[in-house]
Structures are given as C-alpha cells and as structure tokens.
Length: 297
Image 1 (cartoon, helix red, strand yellow):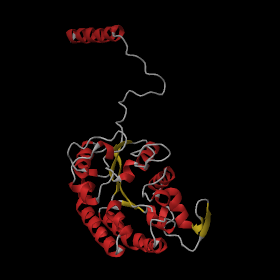
Image 2: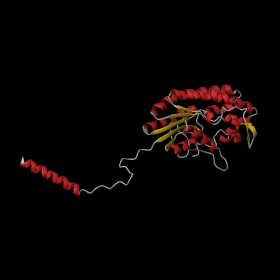
Image 3: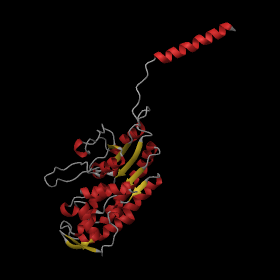
Image 4: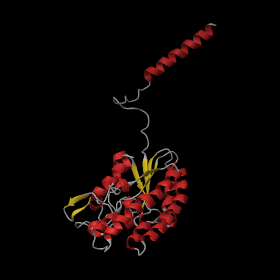
C-alpha cells in the first residue's frame, strides 16, 4: 500500500502546483454576469399604409412612410426590434398574393420582400425567430373598404369588400398563427374616417354618409374582422372604438376649423387627414392613439 500512498501524494501536489501557476481569468465587474446576453426580441408588422406610417405631403414634408407610425412607436415602447413587412396600398388580397413591395411603399428601414408576398415573408421571419417573437400585428382591409365612400351604393360595395377581407383572413390567419407559435397576434381595425365626410365639401351627402358609417364599422366591418381574428386566438383591437367612432353624433363640440360639429367628427378630424385633405391616413396624434390602444389591450 506504500506505493498507492506515494502516488496519491504526488497527484495532490500536482493539483496544488497547477492551481498556483494557472493565471486566473479576469474578474467580472460588479453586477455583471458571465452568461451570454439574451437575443433581441422582434415585432413583426403586416398590413397597409397604416402600418408603414404613411402620411401625405404636409407642411413641406414629402409623402411617405414615417417612424411616427404606430408600429414604430409600439416597437420602441415595448423594447422590440421591428421587422415591418407592411406595404402602403396593400389590399387584403395582396397580402396573400402580391409579391414584392416597391421601396416607396415600405416604411423606414423596412426589409425588401425579395419577390415574396407579405404573408410568405412573415411566415419565414417568424420561423427564423421562433421563441424570440414578442408581437405580431396585422392591419388590413381598409383599402378594400375605402372605395365605398364614393360608391353609388355604399352598402353593397361595403358588403362585397367585407366578404373579400374576411375570406382572405380566414385563409391567411391560421398560417400566420402556426408560424408565430405562442407569440401574441393582434389584429387592428381603423378610425372611422368616413365620419369626416360630415364637414368635407367632397361629399354632397356627407352627413348621411357619416351616419351610415357608424353602423357600417361597428356592426359590419369590425364585427367580421373580430370574428376572424378570434378563430385563431388572436387579440382584436377596435381602433374605431378607441378613437371615439361609436360615440353619439348628437354630442357636439366647438371645432376651431369647422365650428360646432359632432364630437366623433371632431376627433376623426384631429386624428386623421380626412377632413382637411380627404386623406384616410392618421396624423401623428392618430398614430399615438393607435399605439396606445395596442399597448393597452
């Protein structure tokens, strides 16, 4: 057994010598950790010009996408990296079928779709970032509905537009939901811009159109969207309600530009460019309101 004791003793000495001669690694600063930092979490945005932050030319500023758009505000306030696949002018059909998106129709720093549809690009992006997706938003259907404001038969036009939007969402949302995994998927609607027809000289029957638009959005368009998003377990944010679109038109306020007008009309005049320019896009205040509704859902 003396040989075994001698061997054990030599091994112990070598361990001690090795410990004494090995150069210690740098001491991490207080409060730091040696584990790798977590990968960034992403927010994938799909849709139309509302998502790109598009604004018309105003005050000398050129038309185009803006980082004042709601998607950029939500990303910044949620500490998420925005991957904005939206395309200005997109209809619900184009979300699924139109490949590519010209640079002028994308938001600031938006990735090139490289010949893919928004839906295809989103599915690929979500799968590549599986486990790191913090949010997915979809805002689509407005470009299907917008032509109905000037249609001879607005109700028939709206019925056809809603049917198209609903059919596309029924096909696209399950695919998007599967690719997103457990990440929250949020569908959005729009302010009721047609309320602005109340004060717009572009619409001879503007007050009638504004009255009709309330039920069109509340009971028809938004109800259909909410049903489709609900089928895949997605949240639905009713921007029409959040921007006062369902408030009574009998309640009035003094507007600096138009005098005494219904309060919901005054709100849509402040939150969109419709009253001033017959343009459906949100003002910076409108994008703030949409971002608040998404974050507060």
